[in-house]
Length: 114
Image (cartoon, rainbow, N blue to C red; front, side):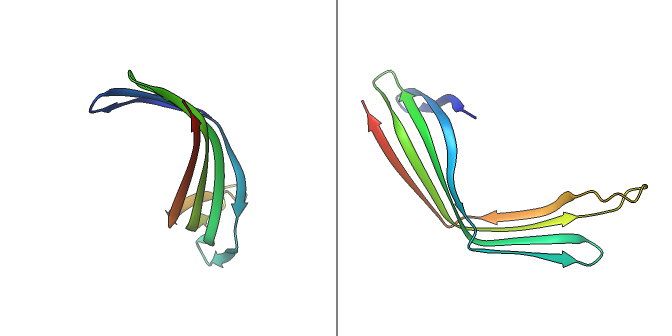
């Protein structure tokens, strides 16, 4: 998906567009799944990382610029609990009951041209 819009700053509006967003790497060095009796499933992911590449461009009344960017997100921790109830026909369904996510570091590298 692309992200675009306007933001207001002291000297005027900034128009931005972020396109060609791609996840290029995902690492899960620590992950576990456990059963919670009577409730469902607990998923815990620790110290994960994610790399995202994208194109970007910005415009103001004064200048315009564009380029590529790489975002590296690390020290990501996720805990999710899924319920797995049986319906009237004894089929199991799955739904997310709770989810908590934290991230430790975000590193953004911009490569641009005027």
